[in-house]
Structures are given as C-alpha cells and as structure tokens.
Image (cartoon, each protein chain N blue to C red):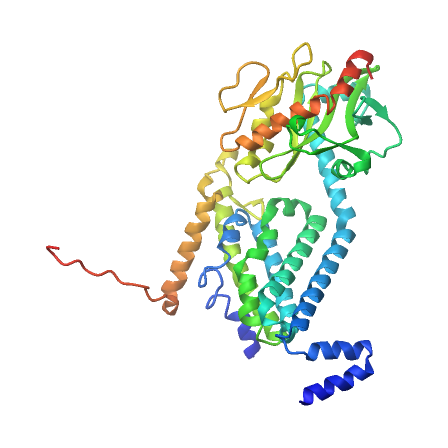
Length: 279
Length: 216
C-alpha cells in the first residue's frame, strides 16, 4: 500500500524526474516497465552505434580509398612493361573519368573521389533496375555512372581499368579489370573486396587464381561475350578460365561479373564508343 | 583483497577456455599470429569489462523475461563499436581478424559472465570479474598464438626470431601449425597440462563402461 500512496504523490508532482523515478520504482515484471526498459536500451544502443559509425566513417573510407589505389598500383606492377611505359609518358597514376553507362559518353561534373557506386545504385534517381533475365551478376540495380581509369599516350589508349562488382556466394565481390588497348584481352584482374568464406570462396582474391585471367579474351571479333568460368582443370581456349574447386559459386560469380559489366548494361556502350571514336 | 580474487581466479583456476571450454571458436581462428591474438584479446577484454559494467549498473531494472535479449543488445552494440574503432584506427589488423571481432557477440564467455555474474553483483566486482575472465582468455590465446606463430612461421609478433631454412638458416616451419587443427591440439595439451597439475579440475566421468560378461 505504501508504494501506491507514494506513486500517487509522485504523480501529482508530474515533473519529468518524478515520472522517471516512478517508472524505475515499478516492479520488474510489470508490462510497462518491460516495454520501457526494452525501448530505452534499444534506443540508447542505437544512438551509441550511430554516433560511432558516423564519426568514424571518414577515417574508414580513407583507409578503403588508400587500399583501392594500392590495389591498382599493385595491379600495374604485375603488368609487364607498364611501369616503363608510365615513366616514358611521364604519368604517375591512371587518369580517372566518369562514364555515363547508358551511352558510353564521358560525364562531367561528378566528383570521382567521393563517388560511391553502391550508394548510387540504391538511389532511384541515379540508377536503373536490371531486368531479371539480364542480371547475371545478381545486382538488381545498376548505377547510371561509373568511373573508369585509363592510361593514354599521344591520344592513344594504352590501358583501361574498369571497376566492377557482383553478388557472390555470400557477399558482394568488387574487382578491377584491366583491359589491353584492343578492349578484348584481359591485362589483369584483381579482386578488391569480398566477404566470401575464408579458405574456400575467399581464394578468388589470391594471385594464383587471378593470374589465370591474364591474356584471356572476353569476346570474339564480333563483340559477342564468350568469357566463362568452367570446372577446374577443364579450361580450353582463350575464352575459358578454370574455376576453383570448393569455390564454384564464388568463381562463377567472377565470370558472371565480367560478362555483365562488359555487356550492354555495363561498359559495353563505352567500349563500343572507344572502339569507333577513340578517347 | 578479496576483490582481487575476481581477477586472479579466472586466470588458471576458473579459466574460461581451459576449464569451461568456452570461446574455442575464436581461439582457433585468430591464433595464427600473436598480433591478431593480442588484438582479439584486447577487444574481448574491453567488451567483457564494459558489458559487465553496464549490465551490472542496470541489473535491478532489467525485467527477467527479457534479460537475455537486453544483455545481448548491450553486448552486440559494444562489439559493433569496437569493430568500427578497429576499422578506423587499426585497418590492417581488422582485415586480418575479418568476421571474428563481430563474432565476439556469440562468444559464450561474454554472455556467460553477464548472466552468471554481472546480473547479480555490484559494478566493481563485475568489472573485475570481466577483466579477470578477459585476461584468462587472453592468456590462453597468447600462449596458443605464440606456439603457432613460432613453430608455424618462425616469427613472434611478425619479427623473425630464428633463421628460416628458406633464407639459408636451419629452421623449417611446420605448416600444420598455421592450420586450425593445430589450435585444437595445443588447447587440448594445455587442458591436459593444467588438469595434471590441478587435479581438482578433472570432471567426474558421466558414465563408466560396464564389463561385458563372457559368453553373452
């Protein structure tokens, strides 16, 4: 009874602090208290996580950007003669251009440094839905613009690097594909990010496997895309790459990624334009 | 003095890994090198202490019907914060630890201490208990990590301590030590060693084998 009298008196005061005390004084198995504690804990935790996440995001993104450029640098190092070529042309890094994917034209006015492909693909204003039958890479939506990295000498393309991504077995795989000037031959492939199963699917990022892609032909003379990943050890010809055993879905996803991004919905129009008009 | 008992007891006597066999999964995964083992140890100890403090602080107001989910929410939030901090300030190590920092949520040591100790004790003993259990876990992780990194790669904290055969020395690294099964062997040997020295840790057998009578 004493508790009830006190609760009433507190209620009359009705200040926030008193209401809080009254809430705390409720028995623990009380329904209001149960809901109240659940909501307060959830809200407090959400607040802490949001604040940490937002505050630390610039630092984390700086790390990721540094890693991405380190990957491109490392990929350039694997290409024979590329460093000498860059020295003779007097450039230290690849040039970045924004491409409008629908017609392959160069788009200006988009900041390439802060461009976030995944965020853009989720923005209905800045992306298109991929028809399910064409969505081999499992992406659902595709952004309208994408950055490309290129190296040119005397207005002639020497190397083209295209960023791409696909849905793998359990994560999004991101990669950089370097194409030779004929725009069909793979100069190098590097997996820049993934969250595939460690020890199995994760092997797609190992140099032993990505090296298999070097020199492969993406498409034939007419431009039909033929590249595919086949069961390990059975690859024949310039259009097939051995898959990784135990990582079938992850390695197939890499093949599908190339097919999609070099196709009509990916960089296809851009590559066509490069071929007919040059840079 | 009696408060210090909370810190010292879980080191060997009530060690969460070797006596209670908790947190084995992460102990396998992150002990290929001392650097990752140390980072994981620090992360887990920090989560244990912080979760013990918060849960102990609000223990009188956690309704018993939702107590586990409240504990998990608090622990999960702390783990996310630690993970974000690592990604921002120790990017290389966070990549090597990959998902295992996130999996601290499911580490039975953390929820176990929250449920069995922090829910019933004041803040200071709870934090000390968390610290003790974190250090006990760390002790095993560092031991396993040291053995695996030394025999598996000939290095400690990434620094070469012996001359590798590949570089013209005498030491041939034992590749098995870098694979997960070796952690099982080392933890098994540690459990054996500790229980041989401290016989009170030996659990009574759940059942005994009956001798089959001849002729039946």
